[in-house]
Image 1 (cartoon, one colour):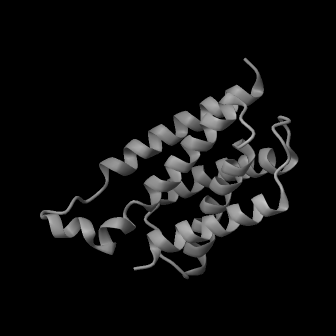
Image 2 (cartoon, one colour):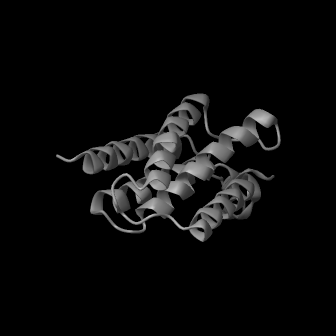
Length: 145
């Protein structure tokens, strides 16, 4: 199997494993009102990062030209989660082991996205900026409460 598909399958397995763990750790509300509170949505941040990793791994596996954008989006979201948590700017619901795993995957994602190592189309400056901005929006949405 070629390295692109191996990395994609590895990312997908990591995303599925962490996604299941994060889903099982959700505190579901007792009544319908709880689903509309920010405290409930704040729990979904870790799950959102796992979903981003799964989507980027799908595009990477398929060899789609969108793969580099989604890899950069995942990378920025994961790294920003770690940086905002360490700096104390935001509180993250991602456990330390999740931050370490996401951080390692983010470094690999950045390398793939910005070096165009699998010839999927170089990410544009606007694509890189958009992925950075969207990563910030995702982090602030799920962690600002």
